[in-house]
View 1 (cartoon, rainbow over the protein chains, first blue to last red):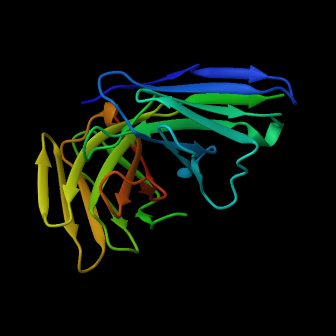
View 2: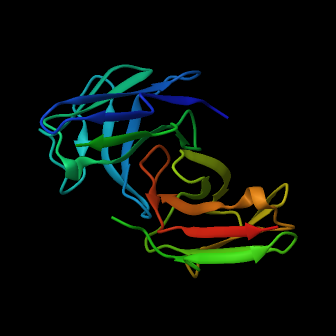
Length: 113
Length: 111
């Protein structure tokens, strides 16, 4: 299957700082990538759709000014959590698809102290 | 938003037994995919079944899809301790669009 990577795999930061998470498609080009969030013992919830060369589309309830998404190339999308707070602590996962199957990155665990 | 429910929410079995998980969804779909997630890890794609397919096999996995009932099932035969994980179904309404996930079934296989 196709490979999607994420970096970093985990991050601990102080409240008020910004954190950038990268999502890369390693062996295919992706004009669209998706960002999900998963809280403990819960399922994945779609946060936003990242579109190469244009603005991201955010799901209802997701603050676009807090979760900045940049999709500057066909293989890289970044999610920046600005002014992170403890309630932003979660598991963030991206996905992309070369065809029908969606492939997921290994996820980034964010802990905001 | 959540697409539907997985049933059961948790399942505990012995090695060698079969495990069946069910998934229901609400809207029309393009295809349905099953994923496995080990604790604290990313998602591993297991199998994709298209809306015009009724059954698909992959190794010890068997997936069925009933679009009239908006439901799917995942059968793992001859389970192993390594199958212990959470299993999610996910659907998309159109190719290339985001997936909507069910709540997941946590499977525990003891040796």
